[in-house]
Image (cartoon, rainbow, N blue to C red; front, side, top):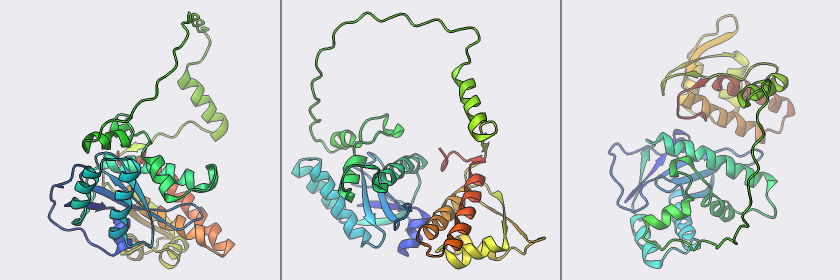
Length: 308
C-alpha cells in the first residue's frame, strides 16, 4: 500500500479528496507526490515523483491517473534494469493506492526542479523527438539537493536491493604542476559586488530581497475588477481561489484581499494555462500582464517552501 500525495491543484483536477487517515507505506520506495504542471504552449501534464528517490513519471493531463501511474512506474523500473523480483514486489504494493495530502516541502521543492527540467526538454531545446519516457529517464539521472546530489537511479537501486551500476573507468590523468593563482588586485571587486553591479546595469536597480514569512501566511494582493473577471471568467481556477475574489467589494476600483504563496502559485498556473491556449491576442495580452504582476508579487516573499 502506498499513498499518492496530491497537491491541491491535482486534487481539484482529478476531482478527488484526500483520505483523513495518514498511513505509512509498505513499499521500499515509499509514497509518491503528484502535481499538475503547466507547460508553455502545451496542455498541462501530471508529474508524479517518489518521496525517497525522486524517480518521476509524467502523465498526460487527461490520463486514467491511477492506472497509468502504476504502469509507468513499473515500466521505468524495468528500463532501469531493476531485478525482476524487486519490480514484482513494488508492483504488489502499488495495487493499493490511497489519495493523501502533501506533507514534505523538500519533495515539493525538488519537484519544482523536475518541472523545470521537464519544461526544458519538451520546449524544443533537446535534440530529436522527446517522448515522456525520455523525460522520465532524464529525470532519473537528475541531481537534487535532497538526495545529496546522488542520481535517483542509484538511490532507488540501493533501496530496492539491486546491485549498483558499474562505473565507467576513467583514463589516467597526466600529472601536472598547478600554476600559482594570481594575487587579487586591491581594487578588484569581489563576486558579490560584481553580481550587484550586473543587476544594477541589467535590471535598473539592486537585487530584490524577499521578505521572510511563515508558511501559510497571507500576503496582501491588489487587483482590479478586470483582473477578477479574467480569473473568474477565463481560467479554470476553483472555488478555493475564486471565492476570496468574489467576496471582496472594490474600493476605488481596487480589490484588496490576501492569498498565501501556495494560492498565488496555484493561480499563476491557471492564468498561464489560459494564456497559452487563448485564441484572442487581446485576451492573451491581458492574461500575460496579470501573470507578470502576480509573479512579481510572489517574488517579494519567501515562505521557505515554494520559492527557490
